[in-house]
Image (cartoon, rainbow, N blue to C red; front, side, top):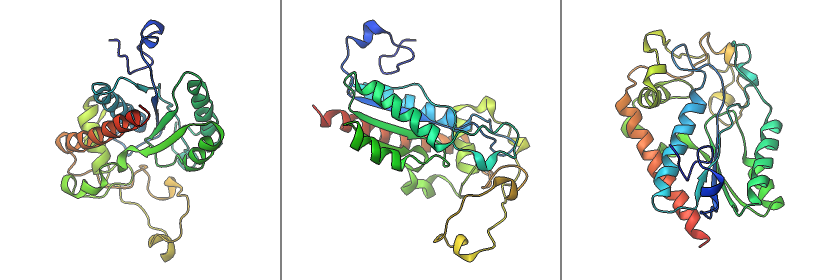
Length: 249
């Protein structure tokens, strides 16, 4: 189906009939998530949220465009697990910067990077491209959008492949989820109190946490919980896209 808000499905004839000013770029990762979730988890849920938000925004404002996603992320700390695919932050930044520069030449001057992987860090890039390319750039880690209501929906914290991510997967792509394979997500803690208390940070080697690349218990996950959270995120993100588009009118 052709969607005017989705670049990979539209065409030059339709593009010339629209005036796009806002572009959303989904960025994910390819990595294991416990034993029961797909390697494409971060890509799949980010693209689903991006598409739903852009479609909803397009109903109210036709100047929003969703760009094709980037499927790889910063995963050097997961490489001991088979087929985790790592690209450096510098490589990601270079790709995103060149995408923004390409699209900027055709009237889009507001960009939203929709990030779906905790290992990606685009904050310095956002700061720099705004200085260099005469654009407004924004970063959204999609899973954080509804955190103020997380406790209303979920009853267990989730860092990686726990209840929230499993619920989202059960809602968006249940055919790719094998709950019976899931392990409990219990992870070894840092020996340092400063790290445990959060005022010192480091990068975790996931292979030292447990043998199933998870931090968070998937127990209690359900498609209903996932639907509630995704709907909340999509509504808020769509509203932001509309506001961003109308800001320049």
